[in-house]
Amino acid sequence: MSRHPHLITALALCAVPLTACSTSPAQETSASSSAAAPASSAPAAWPTSSSFPTPEVPGDGTFPRVQDVDRTDVDSTARAAALLLHSWDTASDRTETAAAIRTKPLMSDEWAAHQVEPERNSSQGAWLDPASHGAYSRAQAVPAIGDTTRDVAEDKAVRAYKVTWRWASRDGEPAEGTGTRHVTIYLERHSGTWEVVGHQSHDLPAGEATS
Image 1 (spheres, rainbow, N blue to C red):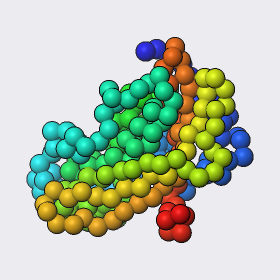
Image 2 (image 1 turned 180 degrees about the vertical axis):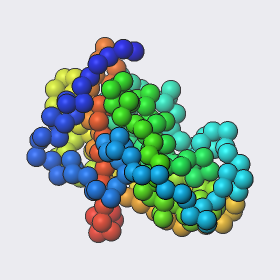
Image 3 (image 1 turned 30 degrees about the vertical axis):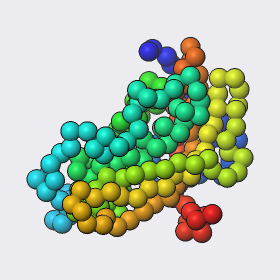
Image 4 (image 1 turned 120 degrees about the vertical axis):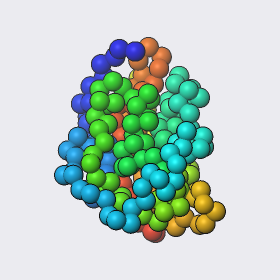
């Protein structure tokens, strides 16, 4: 699949006055992953690979499978991408970007090239307790409220979701921590196949997360 959609398309879509296009600077996103943070050693409490064996399949097979996505359907492609971007396994993943790398088959070649894992996990603190249980995330995605979702043209679309997740532990003990984000997916269709050409997200405050 050799196509050349340009990232400028996603940025042009962002030019529409949509509040979803803002991204929290503290948030680790693929849009900023090319500017990786300086190397930083993990804290002593961070579980090592010997704490829990590396799973044969991330999430023990609970994560969405790329091969099951209907690429001819924009909503199927967008929702799968939103879920995969928030499907993490602390027993094998070092950073949030590991999920974005697993989502690359749904992306254009150009956007996939931007998914570079940084040296440091910006969610390190939030992952400490889940990692101590060898936990993996269980994400859900529902259409976001608002007018962000739209068909820009026959071959260009924007989809927005509210993504929530909790942690499933591997040791039988509850893994603390949940999260909610507003996720915007930018897509283009080429030769009948939809592909992600950009994505952005930001954490939702507690009030918005429960609405």
